[in-house]
Image (cartoon, rainbow, N blue to C red; front, side, top):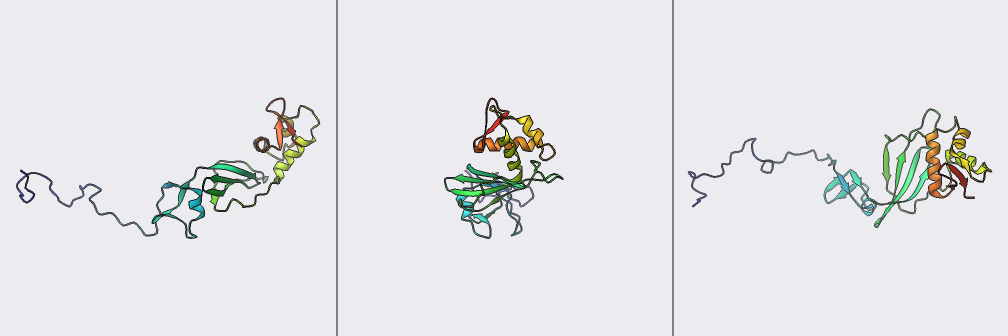
Length: 193
């Protein structure tokens, strides 16, 4: 039978060496101000009700979060796209900052910095067009063709003012928002007015 006080029997030999399992080693002391870099799923309410000093869950400082929600509003401006994201606990405003080319036009590059800005759902978002959107809208609105203006004509009308990719993005946005619609195919547009 095993006698824990008998040193001559086989069994576990405890010697403090570097070969101990990580669970038995003393934890190394991390700097007190170092924050964990894990991505933590949170609700919008947790972000909105966090203290001014930052988001904490328990005693853990949180710096990177992920949320799951529905985009309820979107506003495109010359330097950023603003989204209002909602879940069952609240709403928050998020900004996608965009870069401008040498002509000051939005390039739509994907390597841009983004930020999540804690605001309430009642944050005011302008429903007006930015200058680039207004130019595209004006070109579509001036068309007298009953089948709508072809995409190529919109791009040609704004050549040198906007990049074709930006025009296509604006056309897609305006269709999604109901300002314009496609007519005989996906490349002909008419204003809803």
